[in-house]
Length: 166
Image: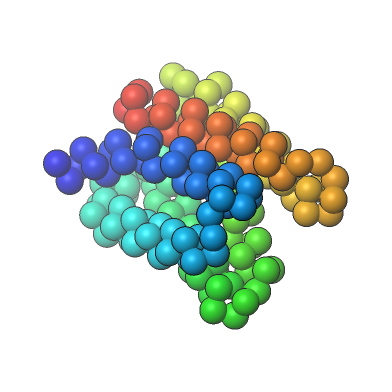
């Protein structure tokens, strides 16, 4: 059961996380809930790392995703620190970090596999485009919600394909 949770859990958690972020962007979720979400996300990442560390030591795509999760744990804890220090910069760094890290992981996966490479490259491109649109929205250009949607769809397509394919 633990292995099944590790293997299929991200296929559910990734889209839920981006739906939650979009709800927060729309003002439907308060800052306390976002803080709790950061703590839960840090716990999930730590769980996946500790229970799957050896399985991700294959030198292939899983090793790349292990690196994404290690860095991502730091990025998530940066967001936690943003709440304690009341720092918009740290919170934004955490959010944008989670837009870009999976894009790197998806592109890396696309480079390593034959079957589905186009899905991973496309997912990485869509997520990266979403990150750019979101960052531009911080400067008052474009819609942050559109950026979040592109990131969410890109990452969801990539992770769901990986769950189904592997």
